[in-house]
Image (cartoon, rainbow, N blue to C red; front, side, top):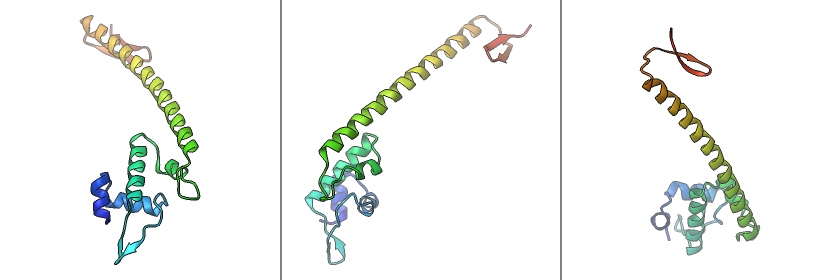
Amino acid sequence: MRISEVSRLTGASAKAIRLYEARGLLPPVPRLNRYRDYSEQDVAWVQLIRQALALGITLAAVSRLQGRDGRLDWPAVLALLGQQRTRIASERARLAQVERALQQVSDELQQWLLSGSRDCVLEPSGCTTQA
């Protein structure tokens, strides 16, 4: 099948599919009358690559999942998924900390506004009222 059909089936642009091929993520695609002739297996690879990208996994990481025979190294896939889950857990903890800091600033600002004071001097400790 031609690249337009692969694009339609996978949602990947033709440019992205060519990039995957150039990076070695797809096995060499035979040509038929100067056009690339993609197989069902190529479609499956493009779908896998797109799913990995949607999960926040980079193309470089995906390229390390292929064995020399062109097949997926399933233990490497599981390890990569575990690493990604660890990164997400870490990011979630960082975002929770940012959320707490935002809530604290919001609470302080709301208290200041409720105090009726309109003049504010910014200090490292927050907004203080001018005398």
